[in-house]
Image (cartoon, rainbow, N blue to C red; front, side, top):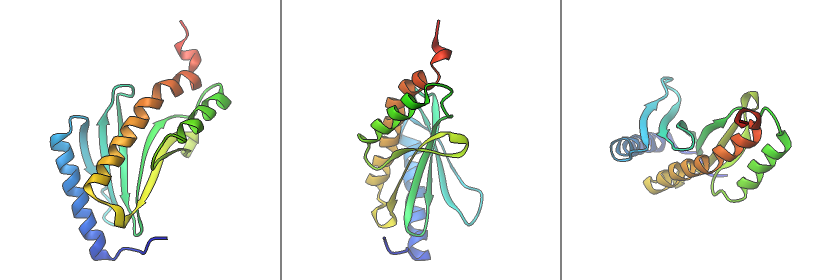
Length: 154
């Protein structure tokens, strides 16, 4: 388990993530917006992305004492063919680096991951954002067609 960061270290990381997010918003055309949590005791960023397969989605970065947690909502729980739907997602997990499909509130599907605070760099933030973008884009449409197949019938 990583050592907990001090308040000063967390403040420094928070500033680093703020700077990175501002640069992404200015230079990365897939980044639609960047917002911060309004609660003063939570260090959280919401990076809204423009996708192709999934029109828009948001990656949440939460800086904690030991880790930077990241997640994105992918889709609601499947309406049908549950076994095949979840098998598809679990098999996709094998190809992912640093993130995995999980089931969250109301059985919705999320991609989540975390890294130790000591590993937070601009390059690592770029990798995380790019990976989550690619994973959602690769998996969204096939999972939708399995879990909501009757909506796609002619």
